[in-house]
Length: 325
Image 1 (cartoon, helix red, strand yellow):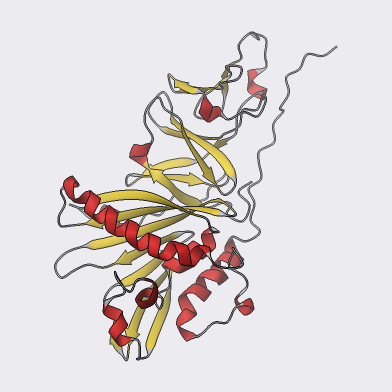
Image 2: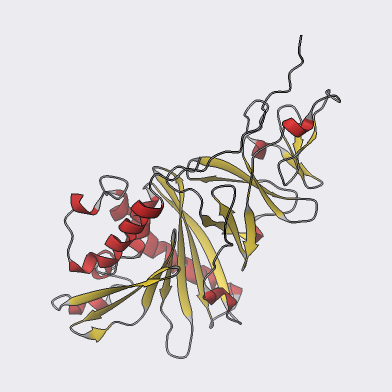
């Protein structure tokens, strides 16, 4: 399960996207996952597959904190325990559970663990703990492997070419100079900064393992951050959750303005990144690289060392409760 993206915490949605009494269906690294709120209001996540006949639980309803399969009415709680099997009062329900996954709500985000036994909790950016910030969010879907989307988010040299009319406009006049890009290892991933002809460029990037980029823009005396979570849906599709956090212009009425700019920037990237071949980032030696590719090469090393080849082992449990002859 969760091939090549197993045993990590990933942001999957905003916590407010998970409404009481309504299932939320998402696809994460090739697996269908259904989220819902249990009887206490706590977020729960199950593999979106009924153990009876394999149908999507997300097509059913949530009632009193339990999700009901739309096919035969089997009901499951937030831990995946079977609470009811219609027409079969003698069913051994302890053997008929769904597959539950660890899920957390932290700093307004919904996190999923792509495995079964996390050894640590999610590590949100410290930006979320700062007071007085307005946060707006949106999602876009790219037809590309998530690793291509992720390394694009960590790549500074492309800005004056791909984003020549938006965030790269200022850098175009400096194209003739020498760019130096620094990668600093951090416990959460890495920090990226750049200088042109020895003059530090404003802002910085942070890579937060496994799949988050945070851009520090911060005008004088203000805070402005853009965070992108590159969420794999499958080997050919990625969902990007774009979060803008700001200490100014905090009225929700201004959120559409920030979303419009983010959407425009994302579209500039999308067509370029979707054209990449092969779809998944290859070993570093299979593509030509130069000095300014240090951050993307660092990401590739992390991906190949910590994620590529990873799988989550599903807990073994009886799947049948059939009568004996």
